[in-house]
Length: 580
Image 1 (cartoon, helix red, strand yellow):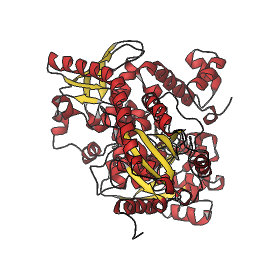
Image 2 (image 1 turned 45 degrees about the horizontal axis):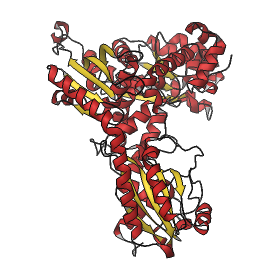
Image 3 (image 1 turned 180 degrees about the vertical axis):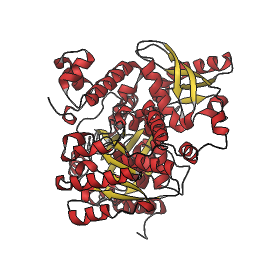
């Protein structure tokens, strides 16, 4: 590695940290490429002209999208094309640096500048007989990377003109992007200026690529609010040009907002939102100002569950209420929704400095006698007892746990348990009778508003020394648009993996793991927000009826055949719900 150019050496080090293979194993491939994207519309005419000059030349033109997936390959003689096929340099294959190592496409995308890679500088062995230069195509208005134009040749045929030719073509593509976008963005800018001059409201003007804020708006919104404001406005503007209502921002800020569509519903230029912050009395009520206010109430106010959805607000309120009640609490929900996190939060509200003992029923079958002996000898003086995965408790241990719970209730001991939603149907179902207080946590797909705030908390957890680390708006939009069958646990895994790829920088789309970079954002577009509302309604009905399609259809007032058709049309995976 010592003989490599410094910029190549830096790229190789990134590849080694991530663990990129130098072979051809598991090269990411997606057969379907977008042939009608904004990038293709701008680039195709330029490439058509370029091909006329390179038709039989020993060089090939490659176009990759913002995820480094090759979407087009043109020109080049037969020998070069055959060599590229053997190396899988073809449409559908992705050449992001974390997948394929140092190369002209992926490293240009990572560095966000023109990048040349020759011969042995390629990290992947199959590419080391080639030379290539990749130039990022940067949108002139949004400043986001739309894709990469790459010119590749055999190593023996490379020359300095490749870079100059690629840069010239990219300048022309960027001019076409500007021409296509300028009218749309200028209409959005004009509407923003008009709203800004009207009064003292905080004004935000945005679409999926651009956000403009007045100084007043910049004081009350943060990066996590951008995707949420866009999502809220799209849903509220379904079938209308204006909507007035309330929206919750980060840090428990609620604003009255007027959202207006800019342009027609078929081709909206964006949305303008005028906001007025609620004037709330920040002082404590007289009851809380009294010296007699309990320490539990004070602690409960300082323990916050991340999120801004109504579901999370209800959870916060329930936890605060239960913190002052001496009764066992059962927390239920789907796997990965954060049951243990909620149980720990409840304990901190009850006793901030106290300890708690955790028993995991999922491990009880390994050594049942030792597990139950430890539970029976649990020292109640040492603090609370949290029993995880109560629904997975072996049937033969149920009577023993019943006895422990009964004794603990008599001694007013603090007990919190977590369990899956189906606990009633399992052998541990009768344990539910020992819990007079219960909390159910909604799945993440029904509270997408929380994803921005949960992501902030998870990034702080996994990178405590980098408090300013954040998700870029485009990456956050992709995460908000997903269903998250694995709930918060899946989100945490994605963010932890993305942190490794980001290497200390803010997390962008290119840092998300494979399978999370190409989420269907069409349902977040203002023109399809009615589909979004339908999708959320279908998911909610399916969850509330435990996946019973007939009951869900009846609740929605539609035939079951209509429900199935809507599920297919809206991309809802029927296998996640038990067929009835």
